[in-house]
Every structure is written in C-alpha cells, then in structure tokens.
Length: 521
Ligand SMILES: [Zn+2]
Image (cartoon, rainbow, N blue to C red; front, side, top):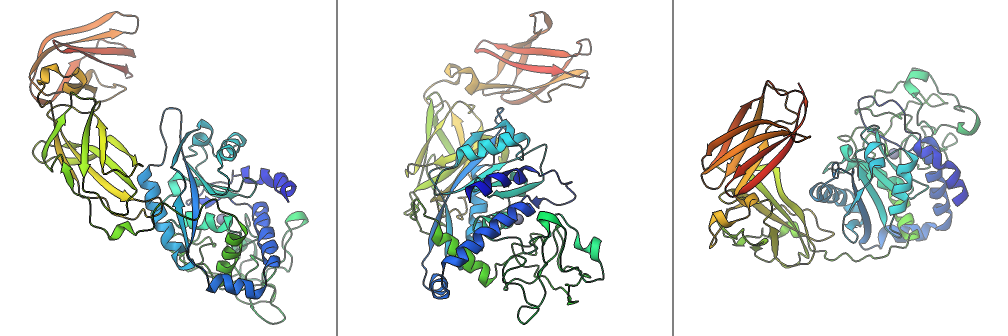
C-alpha cells in the first residue's frame, strides 16, 4: 500500500484550483480514493459484533496531537498558543459524543519554514511537514501559505494534516473535517471532486458512469435500500450519509436540480461535517461514519492515551494575583526578571501567560497589539519570572493567566490584572536606558515631509536627535530637546532629505538609543 501512496502523493500538491470565495479542502479525487481504500480495508477487518462493541463499550480515547506552528524566517505568521487552545477546545466539543478527545502531545512546536509560509502546496513544503512528523501522534502543521492560501488538507502519503491558519476557528469545523479524513472518512460527495454537477446535469438524471479512464465512477444512488441502492460501496461508502454530488462550498440548504441515474431527487445532508456545506451548516457525523472512525482509532496504536490532566479547568475559579497585587507596583525592573505570582489551581499542570502594554494614562486600556510576553509555563508552578527587557519604568502593564492542561484548553483566562513597572530601591536614572526611555518611529517607511517620532521617558530629560545616512554623513542635528514624563510626539522637518535608509540617534545623559528607518515618498 505504501507504493500506491507514493505514486499518488503528487495529487496532494496540485492545489492550483482557482480560489473563489471560500477556502476549500485540498483533498483531491485521487487522495479521497486512498482514504476510501483504507476505509474499506478497515471494514473488512471487523465483524459486526466487534464494531458494535467498539461503539457501545468504549471509554474516552485520548488522541495525542503534535502541533507544528510555522513562521517565516522573519518570525512572522505563526499561529499563537491562544489560537491553538481555542480550536482544540472546539474540536473536543465536536468529538465528545464519540468519546474521542484530543490533547497536545509534548509541547507546541514552533517551526520556521519559508516554504510553508510561502506555499504549503509545494514539494519543498511537503518535505518539511513530513520531516517534522512525530510517530504515533496526529500531526497538524499550521501555516499561512501566503501565495497559495486556498485550502487545508490531509495528506494520505505523509499521514499528516496541513491546516491553513486563515481557516482556523474556535468552532473547529475545518479541523474536524480534516481529522475525519485522517480517520478514513471520504467526502460525502466522493468522486465529484472538481466536477460541478449542477453546471453539467441541471434538471436531468446524471449518467450511470461519470467521467472516463481512472477517474470514472458510478454515482451513489439516492435509495438507501432495495435494488437501486449502491450506498455501501459507491460514493463515500456509507448508507448513513445521503447521496451528495456537491463538490464546492455551498450554503445550506442546497437547491438541487440534478437527479440520480434512476431519476430520484437528491437530498444531501448539509449538516454532515464531511460535506462541503459552509461551516455554519455542518454539525454532525453519521452513525456509520462514527463507526469508521472508531475502527480506525482501534487500528492505530497511540504512543500515549494519558494526557497530563483530565480535569475540566473551565469549571474552576480564575487565578488571582498574589504579587504584584492588582494595580500595585512591580518588583524592581533593575533586575533581569520580575516575578508574577498567582493563586495555584489544583489540576492545572500548565499555565498560559499574557502581558500587554496599556493605553491612555489613568484609564489603562489593555493594548493587545503591544505584546510584552505570551507563552506557556510548562512546569506547573504558579509564578512566572518575566524578563524586564521590554518594560519601562513608570508604565502600566496588564497581565492575565489561563490555567490549562495539555487536554483541557477551554478555561477562560483570568481577568486582566495591572501593575506599574518601578525602579524600586534603584533610582530610575541608574536603570538601563531601555527601561527608562523608548524611541520609536511612528511610521516606517516615512512618506511625509517630516519624520514622525515618539519618545517615552520615565523622567524629564533633555536630549539631542541626529539623523545619519548609512555612509555616516550627518543629515540633521537638533539639540536641547526637552521631553516631559510620559509619551512625547515629535515631527522633525525633513523635506530636504532624499529617499533612502537612515539612522536616527537619540542622545541623553543616560545613554543613546537609535532607530533605522526608510524615507520613501
Ligand atoms: Zn475534505
């Protein structure tokens, strides 16, 4: 079977179909045939009694997922832990009735691949994804595929899933669909991938054979039983899913005019997760699809079926801050780290910690675009030592913590707690300059006749600003600028400076800061 898989691998890469309005599933007709092949192999291995036992006597099976979140070499594009936690929460909701629950195996792997960030459908991307796969886990690579942002898919060859980051949602419908493929479910419209049935056969019976050559197939007839029924072998191979010829994203209900070869009116099930109805339509797997999933779960040997905690952390009270207390002062940022300490929760082996800047003095609105820190604390302790590198004295920051296990990712985060960064026993003047002052361009590249700058300072300072070209020529010098405590905005006239790359240098008695920028008018 491996050889067959190899030959068809190319099919997974041909994802160049024109992208209309909706993202799609990249599982092609050939790929779907491989999935169905494994479905039929599994079906041959289990007796009816064994399938019934699987369905009726099971306990929760925990499926380990190896997550690979991809950024480019500039560090852009990765899905955050928060986004992954949210979809895992939704996914576990969709599979809960089948006693299947998914958990994060090991830790989330943050990977770098310009191939995948550029085009996940390329051969080079397939090599990257295959190379990362962790055996005996369900591997999901998440990326942007910026120049081919069309689809997510399950690769039968590599036995991994590529999830287009733009398709990730907390409802996890795409994710549940691709995992359905992983567990041997074909599309409900099996065979019709890439064919528009309504365009070709509107208001008529479809022929008894569609297409020719390798791709020729007999369409699934509408009747579930009787002499016309072929649902057990044709189409997706399930009599529990209605015949469906719709292979493009469609809202529900479908307005069907094509009929099966016997003239029976089609009535596809738009609630089925393996159909192409839009996310808001799909909610369920049929009973025989669920049986197929159970058979495939039984066929695969998972490296671990024990996550590090099964407590539903969503039912626990939120952690509250011990130190710093809410709206209190932080420990001295003259130290390399400061400690955030909160009340411990039983059953939370991990924590997710977020620290952000704030806006508007006095109101301190949380500015989630100003990320000071986001990340997991894997060691179970209920404190975190935050680096002071990005903290400025006198500024107010907001933080919150979410208790999680590698399985339970549904807990709400705590409310935001706030603290003011201080120099404490050290005088502010003795802090490293980056903890006292920030020096930023408000637009880069600069397209205006002035250079828009902002300076934050924890104490009043007098400074000079000089602008240099890359070959060291001084283009501009402004001396004895006075900056008051807090944020200062400055516009330096620069109409005489030509397009190019420059460096602005802020010099104070506490040290210097510099910013490279581009003038592009
Ligand atoms: Zn699909």
